[in-house]
Length: 132
Image (cartoon, rainbow, N blue to C red):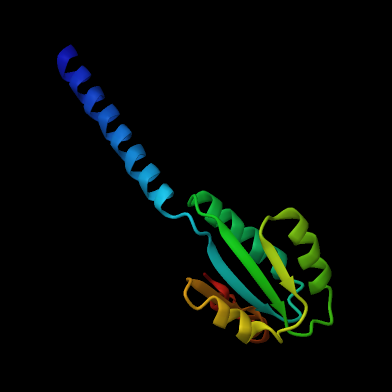
């Protein structure tokens, strides 16, 4: 019975070591951070929570994320909230207009960029459109 228990523990330990090696290899392959582009307008009620969730999920998955936010003329406190979040989270770039959005997407067309239009989700009050 003692030998069987040692054999089970040995196999369990070996499987943990293999899993760590596999995930370490996957983490080293992905060097470029995922880039998320947010287009927002008057989203003071959801922008901070969305950014916190985005960074938390990517941190749990072991991925880096870069966020570029284009503001489409917010008249509420969205700008102040984004500026506060930019100090809290790394790699947030904030553009106060959407004038450069097309140029930005053209510059980054060779990279994987996720475009999320929070302004549409807020207008429809449909948060499922804001999922990544």
